[in-house]
Image (cartoon, rainbow, N blue to C red; front, side):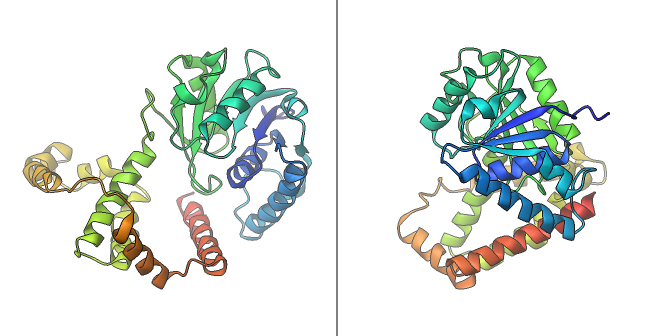
Length: 315
């Protein structure tokens, strides 16, 4: 018997992230209850999940041992929060990125679940100490920040509340590993977590290089997609420098330490990401990919298709 058989995970919020989490949980054989405060939204989400599961099945990328129909049998929609939370051992919140809304959700949810139920948030950068500030029993609270779309991009940042007990971090790590995700533990909370801090650093320097006339929008994206991104798809920055010198990381630092410090000290201030600079970069980007629904939707589909292929290759 599967360890997940009969166990319930509740997903609060039926938007893009909520639907994606539901698909991941279903792939592990868990019963999934998806809730949305807007009447009918959760039911509509099930139809979208069905469509997406059929698409990944057709691409031979369906996760888990169950068929699409068997996975869908494990899924139910709810407009009543107490019904959605009944019997759950793990709750994944996926409402929009607004602090007050998330605080209210967890404050209400706590009244419908037992003391041992893990309360997890999908927030991408709000500090756990703020998100869970209205929860009485904060020791079972944790952030499980996915990368969009989590069905293909498997890393999950586990960020504890200052009062989170080690057992909750361990059990959430074990759950995500069982699901086939790639959980990483943050030892303490930090603004933006880790993924976004690294991402924002790349965005900021890319922005500066474009606005200073060093490179075009199209070419800076090629630097990542055809350069750094090629190896970062398989190894991270620390292993990269370890492999980029004959005798490893220590040798790399001996060779390049001063050059790294010199270049880093030349970086400009944090961009404002507004005004004429933003208008110029936006125009250059829209010349490449118009910002209407048709073009953006097509590029998102292309992104997800390529991520699907990359996930398959890595597997």
